[in-house]
Picture: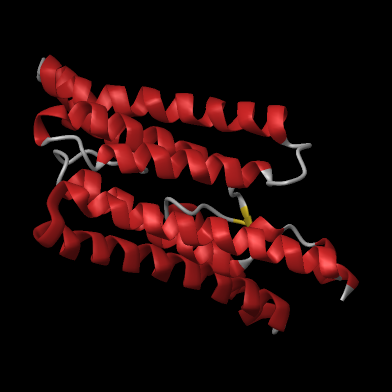
Amino acid sequence: MNHLSHRQMSESFLTAAFLSISGGLQDAYTYLFRGKVFANAQTGNIVLLSACVVDRNWYQAAHYLIPLLFFALGIAAAEWVRLKYQRIERLHWRQLVVLSEIILLFAVGFFPVRLNLFANALVSFSCAMQVQTFRKVNGYAFASTMCIGNLRSCMESLCVYARTRDKHVLHKSACYLGIILMFAVGAGVGGHCIALFGMRTIWFSCLLLLISFLIMFIKEEEKERH
């Protein structure tokens, strides 16, 4: 009981699940609807940017460079929020980051296709804030907006379990697998909704983030009662 009462509310699997669904949806949204730019997978953007530079396609190169720069700025912004607001009591500083994400992504839902460059920049900024802010689930390092690190940790834990039969390690592997599946669900839902809602699809991500925000708030109240 004492361990649970001191666990960070924002590190629960339920919070991470909604964040991961949102992360998958954001990546599908920018890639499928906003000109094949990745919101989260900046490695992919760097590859595509390099190809454009080699081809001297400067206009298209900007569509990958700007989101990359805004991703870097988003990380800095999340750190600024943490340093400035980590001691406030009514809201956890991570909840402030989520609220910022909701506002940014809600605005993106109004951007027409001709403003894809700016839309992708804001989504990348939001994703960076999220990945910098939420880095643990049940005490394990994870990422809610990309899968490569989670997949590596999942398989590494499975290999350790095969050798040791440690059920704690198996639980760790299952946790990572669950996060990966949630990300995939978000990407699938995003791809399906684009055909129905177009640029407004990103608002589903706002809803998921709002649920995460509320979950964190409720968990904090429960912690205080204990």
